Image (cartoon, rainbow, N blue to C red):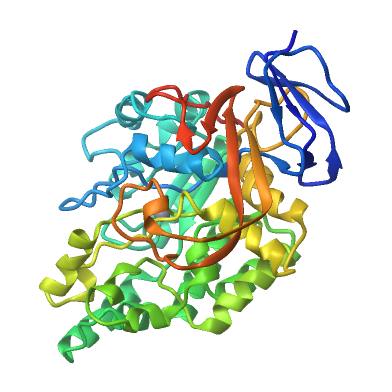
Length: 453
Ligand SMILES: [Zn+2]
């Protein structure tokens, strides 16, 4: 007797599309085949697609920037993700200067555990004040935290020596470095010049963070990591100049991967020229780029020049964004864009537009992110994997509206976007999570996943 059978759909995996039923028991996929019998709990997916739960390895819930905190909690953010077909996420840990990495891990995990309705992992951020804590990485790997975020921007950026130290330590424990690549010192000069000349509006956020300097940082990170044999993943790539650095390194056999995000695929830098608050809403780093770069991101996904799509989901409300305008400086606008709920459907539209196949869509949003982040039981429809399953209607036509979303933020950059596809039902480890437009899971039903390579 199986707990659940999802019947009659077309299974889409990273390698194939075929008609089959899925049998679920004990939270796992236990059978895949035609005409499965033996359950009273049958979901009819006839005419629909069945995919693995989507995996988003770059999200920021309750991100504390000191004077503002991102507006989605672990509960509201993972719930919005579930509605959009995302069943696993990876968020971040930031240790205080006087706190051990392990204490910071336990503190952040406790904050998440009580709230999550999706499964989750945590990246450990390493800042300059963590350089004397690198011995702790051995223990963190045992705790299931094998990925480490290194910033080359913001006040807690690592200089080249610190980057090399961190790469050495990460390589030693068999981990993966995930990188925010920008040239912070150069950006600071350009920002000072802009403000000195009275250029305070949001477009200057983009003009002071030019693509060629972002690419310089990407290239530098790759060189330093490769020198000590540390695999790295470049977060939020939005410009062709950075893609070229990644492609060139991969052609040499360097262990580097890259991701882009919905904002670099659907928006461009003209968004910063919208009047008043509208121009400030889409401030994020690295910034949105010209339309030519947007097109280049689609081609990069098509040709595997970039390997995955994550969101960098970091919602800030209109009132929080207003701050930068009130203080008359683009540098005071909190950076971040929401998209955890729409990513999977947005990217399906790459299939509709002919950029890639349904299997590539699943590879970009589910399978590769799971592999890359060390979720060994997720991101695939195969026997023995967690029964994280999405039933998706590929024919549904919708116009995206804020009031249909569940993200805890009062704007979306995708308002009015015409889209095909809709997430119809979702299971998390065999538990029916989304049904008839409702979330059936309670806060805390998601689980921390110890990730391994
Ligand atoms: Zn981020």
